[in-house]
Image 1 (cartoon, rainbow, N blue to C red):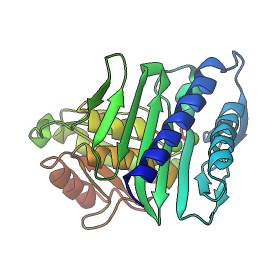
Image 2: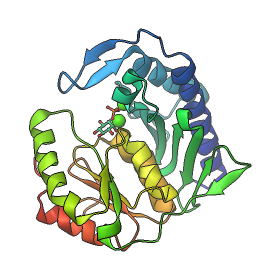
Image 3: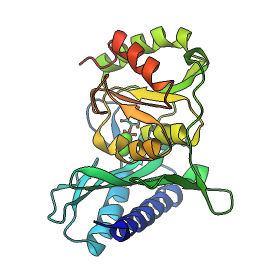
Length: 271
Ligand code: IPD
Ligand code: CA
Ligand code: CA
């Protein structure tokens, strides 16, 4: 595929993320309730997660009927074009449920299994981040035009501001809390934003020095991983491994390596 099809995929990803973001921002019912739960009683789905995924898959399949989908709320079709869309229609559902602003729409396009386009819309920030493989990462927001994204120059680890997240399954959360307790004295501070996709984009924007989490799914990291890498960050899992459900680490060179080593020493990936 040449640049032009990537441009088509990027345009479609941006349109889908923008429209789903508008639906979520403008259509949030005042009495928004939990529709069902998934991996645990605190892993919730609202009617808006489902509506946003339907909007995105309907829009894309109307334009590109042969593409496949993997979406958090159930979309799972292989397609026949070589392109598969990996979608988290609402990343940060708990924040959204409580009326907190840190939530996003994450749309990535894979070509033959490799992510080539990533878009993360953060409607309550008025910002959208996007990247094309090999083309850098950019953002639109409350400024004129597009801004190129670049991760921060690495500080010494003890001055690094690092974000993380906690799984919905109690045993995993307890283990993650133990790892965080060991890390906190070795860092500037730790954040828990509540949207993995925004955490990855905040590394790309230079708003965080690093991010790690165990237990993410492909829809959580597909778009944000590409955006972070295209902004100069390193991403991965355990040392020498690609990022995966086991472990996701993203940080500028200089923070990435010592952070990844500590996470390995602390057993951050454990099942
Ligand atoms: C969650 C968020 C959260 C992360 C969880 C994810 P969801 O996604 O990204 O920050 O800590 O691991 O599951 O459920 O809001 O789409
Ligand atoms: Ca998610
Ligand atoms: Ca979600």
